[in-house]
Amino acid sequence: MIIGCPKEIKPQEFRVGVTPNAAREAVAHGHTVLIETGAGLGAGFDDAAYIDAGAQIEATAKDLFAKADMIVKVKEPQAPERKMLREGQLLFTYLHLAPDPEQTKDLLASGATCIAYETVTDAKGGLPLLAPMSEVAGRLAPQAGAWALQKANGGSGVLMGGVPGVRPANVAIIGGGVVGTAAARVAVGMGANVTVLDRSVPRLSYLDDVFMGRLTTQYSDKGAMEELLPRMDMVVGAVLVPGAAAPKLVTREQLSLMQPGSVLVDVAIDQGGCFETSKATTHQDPIYEVDGIVHYCVANMPGAVARTSTIALGNATMPFMLALAGKGWKQACKDDANLLNGLNVHAGQLTYAAVGEALGIDAITPQQALDV
Ligand SMILES: NC(=O)C1=CN([C@@H]2O[C@H](COP(=O)(O)OP(=O)(O)OC[C@H]3O[C@@H](n4cnc5c(N)ncnc54)[C@H](O)[C@@H]3O)[C@@H](O)[C@H]2O)C=CC1
Ligand SMILES: CC(=O)C(=O)O
Ligand SMILES: [Mg+2]
Image 1 (cartoon, rainbow, N blue to C red):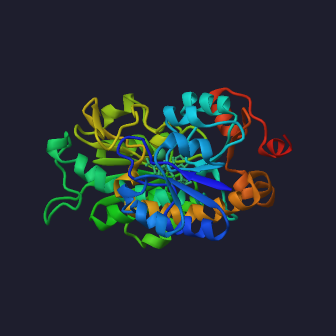
Image 2 (image 1 turned 180 degrees about the horizontal axis):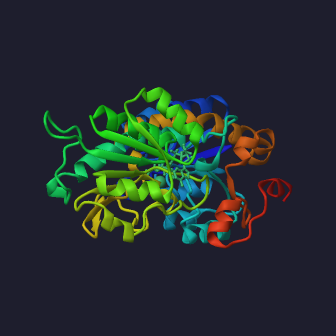
């Protein structure tokens, strides 16, 4: 198969979908790997590293899209990339379709087969291609929030760890999954006073065990939110209902419960965000204020640490990429129900129920797509 990896064009996105190591493996399996010139530079991989791995360098995204059977990327295809997709082509990348009707419309119109990293599952019910980036975004969240708490950024001027005689910041993390746990680890490490909320009692029980009294767990409901908001300097949104639009857990009205200059970090923004007042921001312009509350809603947080993120993502995607290239998407998905769960779009039809529900579009089952 011809595997093509274009340079990411989303603003300030420095990751790349295929590492030189992944390219080397694919070439060893008999595939042709095309890399757009400069695609890896932001992650510290120059064209020579790919040539050394046996890949070929393409001068333009246009040529690469025209030649490749499968496009492997990081971020959801941007409008100009969507125009280059064609019927029968395979796209393997993050999609986050539930909050994105424009992208969904274009992918359906393209006739391509689109497998979303974020809905591929594993045998334990986890999300193995989302997890590595959630580990990164979770670790970054308290760091970004701490920066936003500084006065120059509109924050209240509270230091995460406090100092002797002055209390540390109070941080609430809503959702104790991969992002939430990683965020808790860093926030606790910075000396903050951390509360994690989740709807899963087994998950709260796990966190209670592993953090051994260094954080508080609380069941997530409206009452808990209203009780916590007046005391919290920072709230991190880290919930996920796989594939679906994020539930709105803090309303605009509830912002008035918070102290001025407090910070919301909405990591769940790529699924539409879990605060009513969230709208996606970029690394170039990451924060804005609503009713005196600073919002940080960067939808591609791991792009900030592109080297670490690219390697972590490449480690996770490589076996799936090799299966797709080796067997073709249909056989690979027939052989692996977890990979089939990644199928979101095929030949003009939506194949993921939660996306269909969020956007009001009829979806077929991924199993039906295998029979098309
Ligand atoms: N902005 C960015 O750059 C990035 C965003 N993300 C996003 O972060 C979000 C979280 O991802 P993961 O931690 O990997 O998911 P996960 O599935 O590991 O954890 C989600 C947690 O949310 C909990 N939850 C669901 N509904 C809830 C509610 N109403 N109240 C409290 N908890 C609730 C679940 O029980 C689960 O423990 C996703 O939307 C993901 O796409 C991930 C990586 C990068
Ligand atoms: C998960 C995701 O959207 C990202 O890493 O950018
Ligand atoms: Mg995202």
